[in-house]
Amino acid sequence: MAASFHEARRYGPEPVGTAGVFPNTWMEVHLTTAREILTGGPDCVDVGDTLVEAARKMRDLGVGALPICGEDHRLKGMLTDRDIVVNCIAEGGDPTTKTAGDFADGKPVTIGADDSIEEALHTMTEHAVRRLPVIDGHDLVGIVSQADIAKNLPEDRVGELVEAISGAPSNDG
Image 1: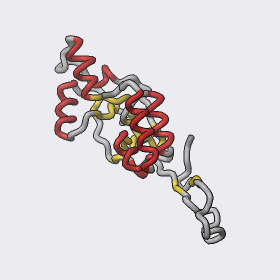
Image 2: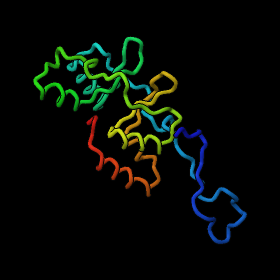
Image 3: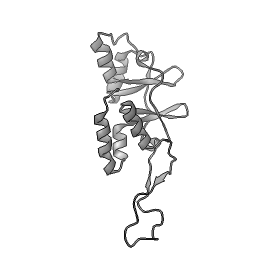
């Protein structure tokens, strides 16, 4: 579901005494797009970077996940701190020789820059991820996290987000 930048929904009847004063605008809510709430300018980890290099980059940037980008600067996947710990170290792997590319599946779950936060929430829930790379055409333009969505949902929808997060097992830490 791609929402236009100014797509709106109308909620409820006009309040008593305002009929005709705000025709078709009472409680109009503009749907926010991924482009409006994303964290832009994402740093990538290269497919050839070791997991130690990726972990240091995460530490230095204060993040728990980084997009994995190839030499063509295209998104190849997402790497999380959980991937490094659970899927490498706990399995006896060597993070000095394993690379980010070893964890790139080539088809990461993404969202379009002009998709609504409703679509982002649906995608996160459906795929049990907490961060979504945002793509504009073929370009990675940012990341939308659960926190980004929570900050931009109406108060009555935040509970739904928390419920969806709690009910879906994590795939990305």
